[in-house]
Amino acid sequence: MKKRIMIVGSTQSGKTTLANALNHCSRALKKTQDVIYGDNAIDTPGAYIENAAMYKYLIATAQTASHVLILVDQSRPQEIYPPNFAKIFTCPVLGVVTKLDIAPENAGICIRQLKRIGIFEPYFRISLRDNTGVEALEKHLLGK
Image (cartoon, rainbow, N blue to C red; front, side, top):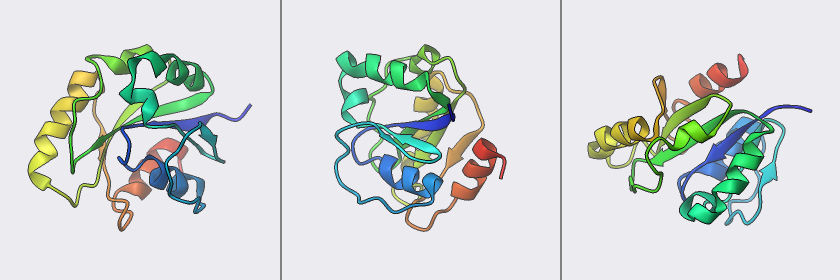
């Protein structure tokens, strides 16, 4: 079975847009209700991280993943992840700050969140508006 990159984040943090970029496709941007498997990435619903009762679905889905990307939205850095959340996964976990072009004053908050979640550097800072940082992330993940 092919291992894919699982993307976790709050609603409207850029999960589907990032999945589209990693999958090299353009699936419609609408609320993701179910787990969507693409060629390279797994798009998960925001509800899975926003409701602790749904964590079990993230853990189960991660069994088929090569990596887990934890997204923190710089435009609205909400504390939705519990401390050391990254430690529930058995595969490597990477921290991704999305929307780096919005609210740059929140950059430090986002990095502190990733550390509290239990993710170590390198952190990837991306903008899906112009794909800033996506190539570096993809190269790190897929070796391209």
